[in-house]
Length: 166
Image (tube, rainbow, N blue to C red):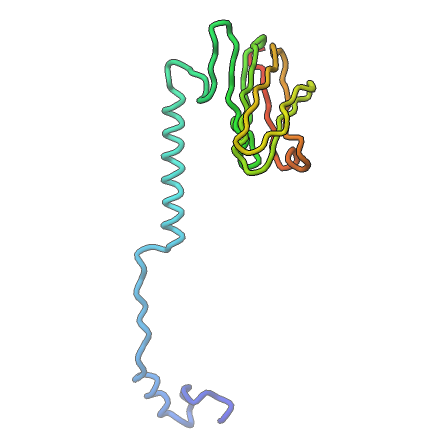
């Protein structure tokens, strides 16, 4: 008899049956909604809003270059490139074939960076808040660029110039 919990009723001790009915019962209040469900609904709403804004932004009638990009009357494209958080912003630049491209690079990161292209054109190593201008000349084919500081290219600090409409 000692191996059983005294709260259980048995044939030998029917009084425990009465105790079981007089104990206060636990009352559970149903929740309005599960917290994970609420955050999932919120995430879906945010994604839908971002998608709608992106879709409406893509319907613009006059295509303009991205912020920091200017095109001169002679067709020379000047692009501002910012080095920050182990990334180049923008990381992809699209140009028409035969476009003269000039990059104005600025290091906004706390560590030094540079920009090296596969055609041996490069900037010097730039300290924080330093700038350099890199004239790539006329671009007729895709170019890949990267930061030559050890480990930065592997960490994703790359820049691609894509020739479109070829």
